[in-house]
Length: 246
Picture 1 (cartoon, helix red, strand yellow):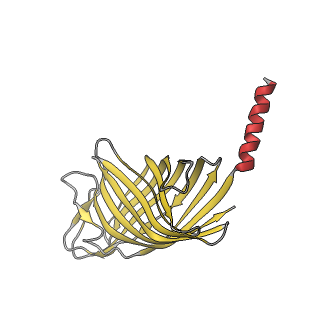
Picture 2: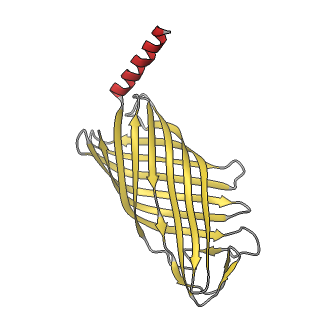
Picture 3: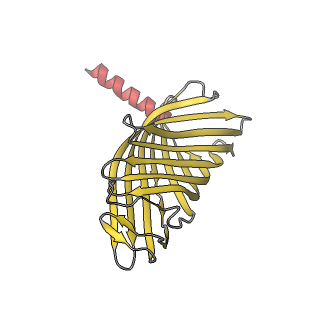
């Protein structure tokens, strides 16, 4: 028993001795590509678009991703990715949402909030100079709110759910400092009722051993088509970020 305990302690110390931490900080501008909603998802409610029926202006956003490289092959990450857009405008036709009718011709203010928090595990391949670099799994916590409000009525739909995703990372280094990166998480439900994709394509530049920069395009797309809700959105991001290695 003493030998087993000693071995476990030595393995734990060796892991801690190697362990490396890094922090990704990302910001930029998010644009709504489409955002279609019907809640509840039945014929008594209206199908409407936050992009076409209202005006969805670009918004600034921020993300933070903490990585723990436990060993050269195994990485654990925590991500916080909040997003809120506030579509607004005057309806050309009435909308029935959550059983309430929002009349045409009146100004309406909406909120589309999609906050995502994720725990990810990645297995990093031995040849990190190759194109395919890592594969893994993620558990996403989805904290979402959709609301409509005018001078007469207010209605909202909240949603807190858990979604599994497949993570991946690909890249190519043109020089020791300059490269291209494709990484993300995605999954389609077996029944076809829902899907989720969050993918970044970026040019990367290593300033030194501690700091890196990237500039790129991110796409967030997906949603669900079930009895409770129909909601599918496409958000496009122009992103700039930095990685700090500790």
